[in-house]
Image (cartoon, rainbow, N blue to C red; front, side, top):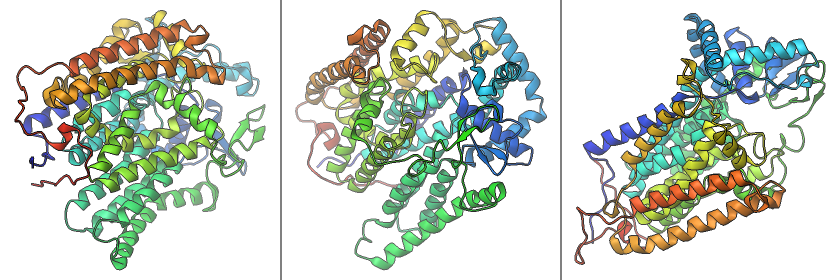
Length: 597
């Protein structure tokens, strides 16, 4: 029997992991996106909190993500992210952030085709007042650098924490591949574009996945109700940031309650469930306090009374989320398919996510049934929830942003997948990172249904989003994108298993390449044809921009496949060398034995 794989990185591996994640963090932080309604809604809420109020009456024309209740406007956002960022905003205000932001915005506009200057805002969104529209237009441009600074804490930092936890969990569950899993999640999924924008999705996902990570750690030793309660607290705080995280919190709660060895011990299960529930209650208490403070009741929340049409008053028609249960009806199979394979579908823009599902099957076969079932349940639950929501893609975003909570759980499968089939992972990572980088560096808040074609056209026009270099006068052409691309390449160089010695054995690697090529070809066929099912321009209907971008993505996939699957010169595996089950790709069920220091 081969020795159990180590669950801890060697000293050099830890340094490499830190450098890889730091490179991704720099890539995220360099990008300074334009603002959309969600970001301005969060910012209005933060400014209101800094004023000591919950109402955004002073700022409501800056956003359309707002609600109206009892004569006042409110941000249509859970308060958690704003509560976290209000002290950050107060600190920025104290050091003169407004003046610095004005200077940065002016410099960016004068030295490039500024992406913060809004030239065609619809006047009907501003009470049909041209003067108000022009004032808000200028204000949004000047606020963009401040929102970027808030995003360093509200998006970049949570993204890095999430990647670190996925890497740790992947290392523990698969005995290796944790760093490759973390970087795949950070560069090959929707984490990449959303780490550069002030949304609450990554903060909420980090809290919910942090609850799971604590429980995974607790399962490695004797039962500790304190850790179970702390996991519940994180799950409750995730709901404080994003209401739909209650779904993940409930499923993680089942995982907390049903620890191995307690399945037939009802008193132990009740104690664990009670500890977790107590933590959840503590985590959502601030939400109850917010509802009382803002609305005067526990039962009203910011989703209720969402503005559907602004009109002259700013609240001419309400009820945007009032149909069914806060806008959620029964799941629609056609919508679920659209979420996966349409022009902005999850598997169209990030096909490497499918490898995560394959990896979860490997985890289940190798004895980590509870973790694999939890991850699969979270993925299925969010797909069902989103397929019943009235706006499943969440507006003009690069992909289905309401599926972000499932990504770290699916990413648990990246670690065993990289060890068992590195060529497959590399082949599908290529188009994923290509498309998501194209979105992030051009227009992630896409309004065009043919997103890939629109991104390709912007690249062809040399018209990229602003970066930190734009704010100091270097424009927004290719030169300002190169540092971002270089950081992603560095992260790949440090994290991915280059050569067969780091993954499967030679025989397995040889079998892996045809599978990888077939998977890449299948993605290419689906990406080129499926959007036409929804009357969206596709390659088969003449979208040459999308064709070019898909071709580049396939080429990057082939390049990564060649580099990962190349024969190793320094670590040949002889016929008598014992391979671990993960290296052999065995499918027999067995337990990975923990080796704890």
